[in-house]
Image 1 (cartoon, helix red, strand yellow):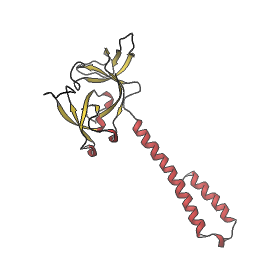
Image 2 (tube, helix red, strand yellow; image 1 turned 90 degrees about the vertical axis):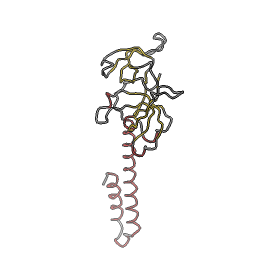
Image 3 (cartoon, rainbow, N blue to C red; image 1 turned 90 degrees about the horizontal axis):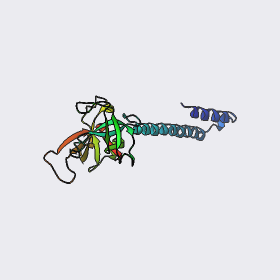
Image 4 (cartoon, one colour; image 1 turned 45 degrees about the horizontal axis):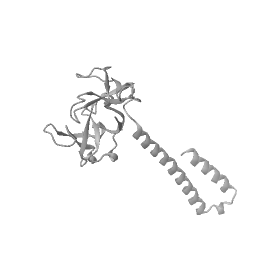
Length: 203
């Protein structure tokens, strides 16, 4: 029982004690339980809403971390690989619209701490939610195992081609070279929702 419910019961009990036992009617009992029920529901609702909001705003990428193109930047649409990075120098007129970024993750192609000038930076993105995904969306995806830390994942762009398996937590994504025509290098992947990010702002 919560503090609010306790106060309600205490108040009504004091009121009822001032009357004779014969006046302790069924209506009083019904009123008491009605008040307790609705005050309890109010508390439960606020907790649920708060929990959902917290879940949607959580992100494994740290604050200020962007996704920058370090590999195959001049390749096909989906071939460009994005790495978690920090901005060393923001884009401006003086830099001709380019960012100086430093990679926070390394692999065979890019070293941790490597710096590069690029215009191809995704400054804002978030982990995908099931209810916002639909066919035709351009998203980021990774094929990194979900058993590993996604904060160190590298990302590619793709286009959602089917959400038929969305109820199973899976989305079909097209890995394409060109946006305006098919290519023999195009392929499809079934990607779990947890391995998808929605692009909010890019350059």
